[in-house]
Length: 224
Image (cartoon, rainbow, N blue to C red; front, side, top):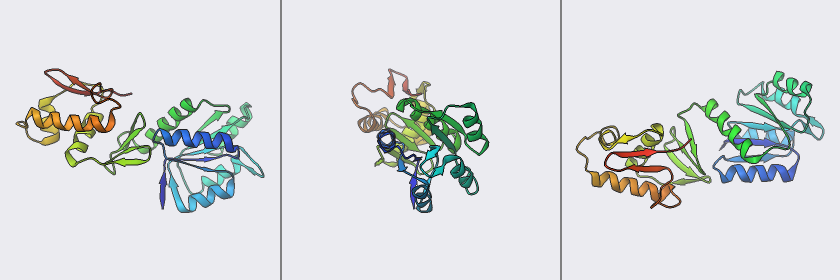
């Protein structure tokens, strides 16, 4: 059974394909279904953590699809529609939708909303996104554009600790103790691991965007 972050159910092919490609480019694994049958065929063979659901789907109504989905799942469902009346918005929320997003939408804003909902649904420490990467704390994997980036055990532990303590200064001594469990780990060992991580996640390892050096002190992982 396949595992996806997002399923788009929408009969606007061009818009749906571009949204799907954009999401996948930024590490949100997404599949597109054009109608009700394709939606339920997909869900019979795959899992997804979120659904973007249009209202007007040819002979089917997104409202009715949402009601059917709510009989079997509690995953977030976000309506996406050009229909803008208050009655449509209220009906969408009343039949089980978690949000209502009006078309036309901005891809980057929609992606930000989807990521925020996924974080709340999964739990803050299950998945963390940065750039085109995501780190899965449950599976202990680093993924970029749907491809796993191979990390050695200590590389993963170091990256996970930096991310879980992001946006604060972390001393070398803290990293030695919390990651290696050894306060006498050498600076050289830490420096090598930091360098390897930068080579895997930084566009330019010599001018790191995420893993910043605090000279004479330690490191900080900077991300929203």
